[in-house]
Length: 281
Image 1 (cartoon, rainbow, N blue to C red):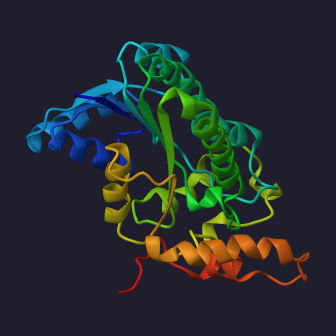
Image 2 (image 1 turned 90 degrees about the vertical axis):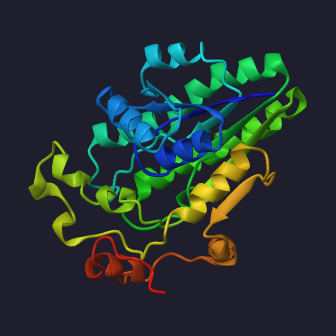
């Protein structure tokens, strides 16, 4: 039977390409974009690629938009919409912290509530969260983003257990550093802070995302496999070859001691690395 896919945050990055690829495969896809200006842009791109893609304004933080989505009879939901705020926990303005969780946690969870109940009524459905390796581990200057993704992990895990007997499948995608522009612009958000720069602990003009970054193709391919039911694993840490490193990092938390007063390596890397640095082959 034909299924309707809803991809949120489809105006850019992973979400846009996943929506376009699913449509190219002949699926019925609704691409939700945050602002109305993105609607025609994505429709035009879909037309240029020769695919039939339905594009709708869907700001997950807008109650009216979430209510509208309940009329779309969604069978497969990808909660991809998200933002990233870089900065030290001691410097992030209050409104920035709140916005991080409104977009990455509260909006997607509230959208999922209504759609999940519709899936339960049908006895089937799939829900996927675009989480992050930051939902499992934390880097310096990513506390707000990682905190929101840790919260996403908790909600996804709970949903997977709660919806199992109702025929609804839940899964997560946990991308590491991929070169979409998302990570680098995270370290430019400080330019819009409404605060007193003289009170900041760090000079953010000198800091950048502290990792080399991978080609995003692996995330797109795995996400489509999960959404279409080809891949039935619950969690997908990507790139796949980094899984053991992430497990080791998580296990290391059990033997961790308080810091010794020296600057951590990743903080130093943030000062030294150039933006948009790809992984060297």
